[in-house]
Length: 137
Image 1 (spheres, helix red, strand yellow):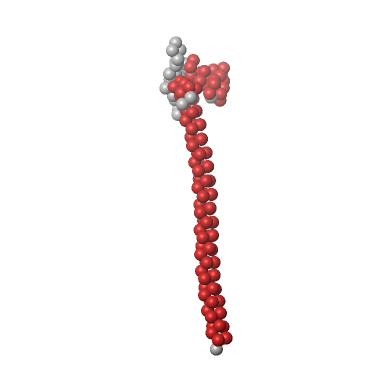
Image 2: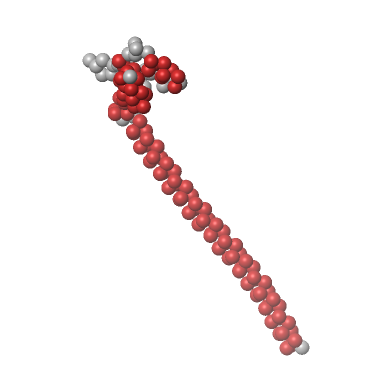
């Protein structure tokens, strides 16, 4: 009987030991998986930080370029028609949206201004060639 009680105690001891071991294995497994998730999240946040730093650097460079003296002077000259002190600013505007028939009419017009002829010479070689051929004929 004593042997029987001893075997029963051993069985219970093994069952309780197995349950505790299973409990510890599951707890450590959950912790390990949780640590892996935290590490992955840290890596993702570090990558996001690097991307934000790169964007900040690009934006800072763009701000530096846009606030440079050269850019501001260029914008003032081109878009606003401004000049330095003592300079004379001449703005030549041309209707670039004119149709082909308007250009043909210009070619036949003997009173074409010199500015228009120069514009065709520099910016519309085909129209200038037509003008020269029309005048020579």
